Image (cartoon, rainbow, N blue to C red; front, side, top):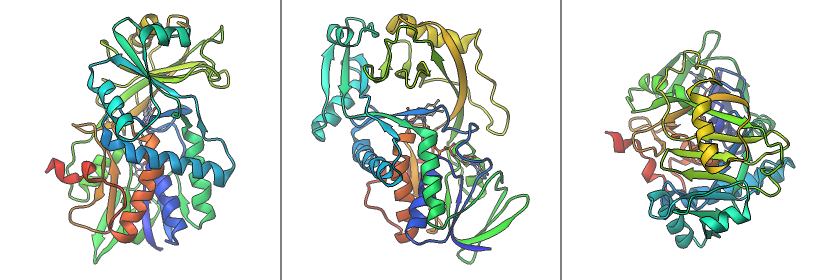
Amino acid sequence: MHYDVIVIGAGSMGMAAGYFLAQSGKRTLLVDSFNPPHNRGSHHGDTRIIRHAYGEGVKYVPLALKAQELWNDLEEVTGKQLFLPTGVLNAGYEKSDFIQNIISSSKTYSLKLEILDSIEVNERWPGFTLPDNYIGCFEPTSGVLKCEECIEAYRELAEQNGADIITNSKVKEILIHDERVTIKTDDHTFSADALVVSAGAWSGNLLSMLGLDLPLNPVRKTFAWFDDKEDIYNNQKYPAFSFETSEGMYYGFPNIDGAGLKVGRHDGGETMNPDEAIPEFDELEKDATDLKQFLKHYMPSTQQLKYGKTCMYTVTPDEDFIIDLHPNYSNIAIASGFSGHGFKFSSVVGQILSELIISGKTEQDISPFSIHRFS
Ligand SMILES: Cc1cc2nc3c(=O)[nH]c(=O)nc-3n(C[C@H](O)[C@H](O)[C@H](O)COP(=O)(O)OP(=O)(O)OC[C@H]3O[C@@H](n4cnc5c(N)ncnc54)[C@H](O)[C@@H]3O)c2cc1C
């Protein structure tokens, strides 16, 4: 069967792209190795933080604001609550790049940001014990996205707009011929005029079939939920958070619907082969100990582990994304290397991919995410 566009990988980025392409009238096929949303890639675990004043660089702010606008639209169209306005507390040394980027982002784009010393933070949210030499930057308008529900919402809308979805089908071969693309799974062969590759941690292998050797490192990550018996961390009064500490970069979520306080570590992790089973969360060894150490220092009211999970990041050397057209084929768009901070942007990345396929250009500035920076 022939389509206008095939999307390989219907996860965070691909499902959103599928929706925007189908909505624009493109006959679209999405193909995924599993049945998204699923717990085998980078998008499971209930929640993702969306921050606007961006610690990873001011260049991300316009994308974050556009992404938020598109999440709000998605809520309106579906009638579902996908975003929880918990606010986000960023904390660390005042002079760190992360904190300085947040402050510059808020100044450049007039974003609401409350800068608090450690005493003010600890008084306002009794669950935190920030040390004297840290400051807090509180973004009242940021919050939490329900990640699997966001993907489900885009999936429903993509299908309503006529997209076909083939699940539990891994793409094993890509052929390019006469400005057309053919893909093969074990059971199917499809062709299209254009292709989107948004395969998360598996992107490296697929992109090598297209002659690209990109520095994409799949990394095992862990996160866990802890008991909140005294209801200190309830999302009605407690924000999501992102802490750059001297021990590492940690993030977390308030207790939402009784799930418990969720905490993860952003930096570090072991390189892995995404085709092999990810070693499970180790409740007795390093995985749990690391998160408990963080809690002991900064949120000592909770220490009781409920359960942990593993997930994957796809990390580039500069931890910036890859969003671009293929250097040799203008009908192939690529989105990968989201380096553990991509979910919040998936709405706008989906729109960008659709624009790149339809017109070869996008209104957003994607120059920092060019493939050419690696050549
Ligand atoms: C623990 C954890 C916490 C995170 N926290 C945050 C956060 O708070 N805020 C934030 O913004 N981001 C966060 N992120 C990062 C964010 O979730 C990822 O950047 C984002 O989900 C990546 O999206 P993706 O589309 O590249 O990958 P995925 O969502 O994994 O999608 C890739 C899809 O491609 C499919 N696929 C792969 N190969 C093939 C093939 N050969 N054929 C067919 N299909 C294929 C896969 O099955 C998968 O469905 C976090 C990530 C993790 C792991």
